[in-house]
Image (cartoon, rainbow, N blue to C red; front, side):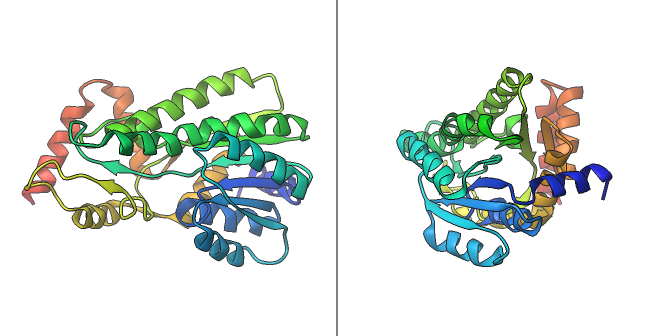
Length: 282
């Protein structure tokens, strides 16, 4: 552990972090690790039961509140910010982590599924930033952490909605970081590769034809290919936050794919297709 990590852990002790998508996966893992450093928590999710489980896992040495909120609801998020400050007195960190998936070719993916995903994955980030930035400005130190994805850098078929949201989060976060560059508020964009979460099993799925993999088959493939657990991903995320990195690539696969896009910004698709063909022939 570097001296920077140690100083950051000392700084966040007794601070307050808001974590959306806190009922499972990376959100729950981030909450557990932040609590381990003595950071107080406001957990946000629509899954009250999952949030309660996360709250039970963070221990009793901190103040932890739970808030059943749909991040796509701008009015509810504005009320949430006031509630968190009323209960905790301040906000230092905002982890806009809530995310969902919808799989299917664009022509068969229902418009309501596209809108549902954008509401959570993109507008949830915007709503979080809009609601909490005034309070972050009042804190002595602050950090906004928005979760995009390696799918905010590369594109594959059947993920038009997910790519639209994650590319948007990356662009939004990059611009926000420039706007806040002269302030005390740091900004990071998290771009995970494969992380073992329930996002695929919980996704909305529309088969393109009778030969398409089933949702269960896709979930199994994803879990086999995902290299990191949620806890391992959270360690990498918080290390990047501690070092003030604008872009936090999580996992070797994310780092390799980001490098591939830099080298071959257009023809990387051919490389991915070739790799997929090799995998299918094994």
